[in-house]
Image (cartoon, rainbow, N blue to C red; front, side, top):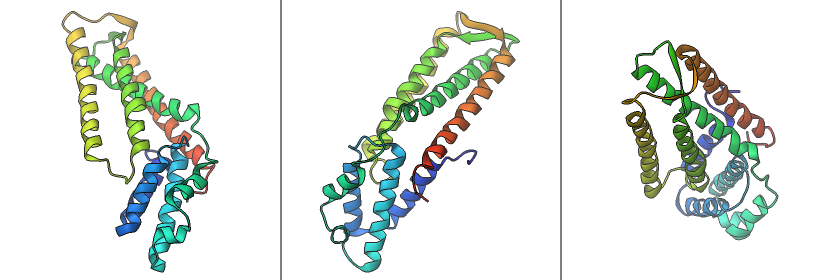
Length: 228
């Protein structure tokens, strides 16, 4: 298991570079097939495995000097249907694990900023309003980013999606700013009281565990597929 880069991210990067080698009509065919594949309820990892197979076929077609559709011997839709019809549906863990990672890391970032801003006092606590950050992280990661990730076709976000990502990042920043304006002037009410440094290290450890756990999940899921 890679410490910072799981097999899902590796496969996405591999497909991105592989697709960049395809040009002309074959690229347009792949782009069209990728857009159709995003409608299937299959695991994100399986979606990338299918894309890798299609990129491999396109490379073979170009090496043989033939059009990709001629090599497939059928329509784009029918070929995609044959690949994805028995695909593994995304389980709850595929949704929960990345979500838990995003929420815990946002808790850690929010707490660290608030605690540091007040001079890292020995006695501190976990403000209930940090739940706002957790909700923002859930919206950002689960409802938005992962939807765009499945929607992405040619491994480069469209202009519209790039603007959306900028907007979503601004909303995350805005939520943090509102939290500070709301909490700091009047002093915070803590849901959990304790030693500020201990809480910091607990959240740090949980963040590391959630990050590594997310990588471990994707690496274990990758073992179900012949993707290398």
